[in-house]
Length: 325
Image (cartoon, rainbow, N blue to C red):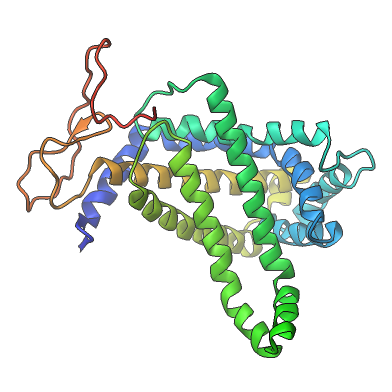
């Protein structure tokens, strides 16, 4: 099947091969580990931020509801107690405090792990200065925090906003019905934007925004499907408490985080393969995609396999490798 000049089967075959070659399952486990240990710092930072535009109790109530549906109501009980003891503790840091900044820095560790994993997916080495890397991952964390806040406003306070705007414009019920139609596509767009920025800015490589956008959309769809299927499994088949006892909720949450990171890293591999020209039906002969020469196949033949790596002399700067300056 050919879509937009790409043989889809060849592209998927190449992506699957790279997922195995780059050991994405292990990278996903490593990233999920950072994700889990960044959870509480993330909540410490995001709760006062969201409280600026919404009630903190309502926000945490919604978060708890989603997590309970994800890991199971019974398994979530000890996890909920731990989350609320951290977030609502009287000594919890406010939005403008050193504690919140440290929490943000700790939360940015997940983007550092993603940066390393995506460099592996793109087959590039990390050569950016240390300070620049830290600024990139911290900036990504702050942008992700803003996107989470906007998505929360859309899902929790969107109807009130629509009612207010509708009353100003004289739309009233019509405005609310319109909002009910667009709020989920809008939340989807926020997730795509976050995936796009992760794939575009974290790896040490310059790339086509079109390839990144396609990978971001596919990743978002797969993540939503994986989340829904995991929730269905937990609610109807799994009993983590019976298997793991008091830590059942933690195991369930870690499993979901692992699935999420696996999907994200697979999306990174897809973006890499699109950028490398894998599956392109009309590759430009001799063009270098991040250190690999395009297949010399005929113009009507899919470039199923990327050719061998190029290892130029260290004293020369490879042309077209695509590393960020």
